Length: 443
Image (tube, rainbow, N blue to C red):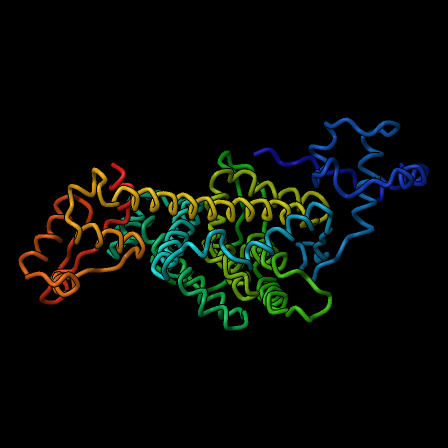
């Protein structure tokens, strides 16, 4: 990965361009260039406004950023505060994320049951567990991972264990959000995320002085050197204090920005021997849920990050090479969140469309309906509206007032057709529609 070219140091930049300050100010430059929070590494290749050199353009943008900059209660390796600039683009996307993550799902009134909402939630938790683990090296295929999580079988290898742990931790976030964040709570989260994937003495503790690590790319180029181990207890406590701030505390930091910055700082500090990324992303979800953004449960940011992992790493590098300006990372994560939110809406719309099509296929007189009796058709309609619902021969018998043999033939016929599965529960058989029922009916 190419490390971004650092911009000219501010003191030297100011000294060389101070005589142009009046002219630059008169141009009313904003913190963004053409609506983008550009880094010097890219901006130096763009065409500056008429009358300005590239360096003068950067000087004006940097001046605008400093005038709006907020110093954060989080420190870089040189013990200087990280900063944030709430540019127009940042505030616009922040509004969109906050509106959608705390509002209602589009078409939620058409999600006809708690079971269906639970299905969407489980799907998202699985997606995040798999892709978050795959970002950190889990080699298990998505289909194998889904089968493991759906069946509840024990993990068989390192990659499956990472995904299993991540899924369990994501399901615990509702309980964790009621508690203030402490170092012990983060250790507990880390132990759950790394159980069985690290040496036993590495889970749930800081990396030691003899375990200082560096972040490298695939070619062995050093991208980031985290703070030294002896500073980690103080830095983690500062992160917890920041995470526990309320909406009435001063200075006010938007809850979505706070969640993103918690994610950033955990990744930057890298307090553990391994599992730092998974812990950072779990803490992001913890913070979002704690602040009332319930839709965060349905989002998979790791799915988006996995599509372009280099951009994720680059957002850290942009921050580190430009005076610890976290706006680059915040901007990237807001884009990720908006894509994740849109992905949820698209998924729900697609599933609702599939269910509507499948229900149409089951209408009396349709070709598919003629292959089923009316009892089977009503049972499948019920299953479409209530994903995951279980059916028994006895309940089906009583519902339709038929003899046991008829009810049994109805359900076994649906199993034979590949529309339902059966398993034994105690002395009776339980029948459940296949997860891909709608697709099966269309075929």
